[in-house]
Length: 259
Image (cartoon, rainbow, N blue to C red; front, side, top):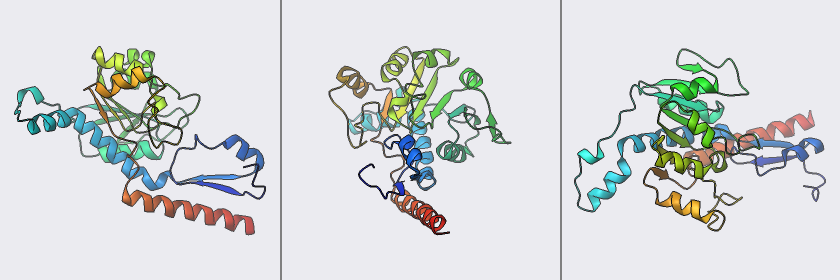
């Protein structure tokens, strides 16, 4: 940035801003623009997909049938109806997930440390302690900051009153992977759907196979975990919407500059 004296704005075709020095941007008066409105549907839908796949044992059943096994009782799943789903982080992605859950006959609790007054007849706005004591499912929709790094750790898991399913479509380091695996082994965590991993490279385009290789190996071998390669918000429709949203925001900044 310091090498571009005339820099006026930085556009991020996505939602997370952890790879941009926003403090330095603010000091220099550089506008930082992102487009979470563009891929919110993709993220919300993927969170629902992960949840249903986990509850219904879809991946394991699919593999077994391909191997010639027809294990119906062993693959008896769970219904989502009647469950209590907790959403942590109620911004664009958290609200999208809540919208997609409509019609599943679930109770939805949402917690956001920095937002208030968003509760309605479909969403219960609660504190974290209430969410941890009443939820069967926890879905994370948090930005990655110093405050949210390892937000789900051994202490968080222990404070969950019920065994629960965990979903993370936000950022990998929000979850302490080693603690999650311990929770899965103890059946405190019933299953985890992870679209993002703690071991992604800074550019989010691959995995760091060297750092904490033992934990990564354990994660990849664990049958209680559903993994996808950071694609929740990567859809054909979302790509166009994010570009459109970002372009509109850039034009607004340019128009403000000329006003």
